[in-house]
Amino acid sequence: MKTFYFFLFVILICIVQVTALDNVRIFNVKPDLLLVAVVMAGLYFEWKSALFLSITAGFLKDACGTNITSLYTFLFPLWCYLVIRISRKISIEENNLFFSISAGIVALINIPLEKIIYMGSGNSIPFGLFLRISVIEVLYTALSASFLFIVLKPLLFMKAPSKEEPREEGLL
Image 1: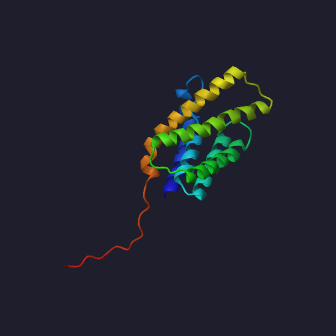
Image 2: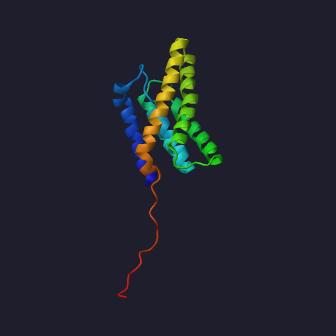
Image 3: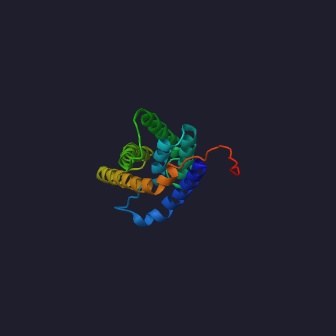
């Protein structure tokens, strides 16, 4: 059930990222909320659910974006896998700071990589603009991750209903 709600959340984030986030750009940069969702999935879901959610997020970002086809459908599961591998070796609790740092690190790798791939496809970005966009987008994504973690904390730590049989109470 938790995976289904998060799946709906990924679809909602995609819609917000394509529409409403254009109004809250800083230096013409907006946070990558779908990347934040991929990090959340890698940290707080079982690996099958996390990979499904990251493939979904990648597909949605490819479908709504103008980048190279299937770039995010490939990259997001890769980042999710790396987050899963690293998080299994580190003790994680319900720590907002750890989550923000994790999202920032993934963004630090992903955002410059996507810009380099964009430039490799024949497009050009001046180096100063590339650096400014990369740094601001990483920071903006990490701050957004912190906010989303606070908002989604009840969903992420939702307990599955127990499958105990109901007890019948007697007259005594």
